[in-house]
Length: 198
Image (cartoon, rainbow, N blue to C red):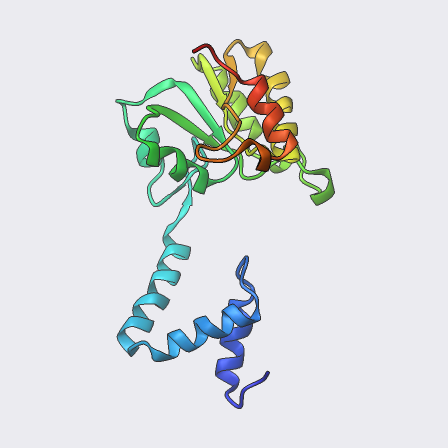
C-alpha cells in the first residue's frame, strides 16, 4: 500500500533497510514517529547522527567506543592476560551484563564465512595475533555456536596455540528451563561433550 505522502513513503522505505524490519513493521514505526512531538523526533534524529559521527573502533580491541582506547582497554583493574574473543561489539555487552568476567576483549568484526566471501583478512585476526604475543595467557573463544562460529573457533585455535596461550571455548549446551525432547541434536551433543562432575 502506498501513501499520498512521499515523505512517509521515503521514511518507510528507509526503515525497511534496518535488519529484521519488514514493510509492515516499518509502517508501524513510521506512524509511531508521526505521533511523536517535534522535540522527540528531533532528539531521536540527533541521537542517530551523533552515534554515527562520534563512534569508532578501539585500536586495541576493536570494540565500539567514543574514546581510543576504549574504557575497557584503559581499565588497569582488568586482567590483560585473559582475552575473550567475540564476533561483534554487541557480544561484549552480553558478556559484560553477567558482571563476572574481568579480562579484556577482542572483537573480530564477524566470522569466517566462505559463502559471504568473509575470510581471515576481513576480520581483526592480525590484531589478535599481535596481542597474543604480548603476555596473553588465555584466549576464551566466545563465537556463536553456528557453523561459521565453530569454523572460526577452530581456525583461531590452530592459529593461536603455537603462540603459547591456553585456548578455551565457552561451554555450550541445553538452556536452563528447557526440556530434552525439544532440544536440537547439535545442542544436545554439545551438552554431552561439555558435561562436568557433580
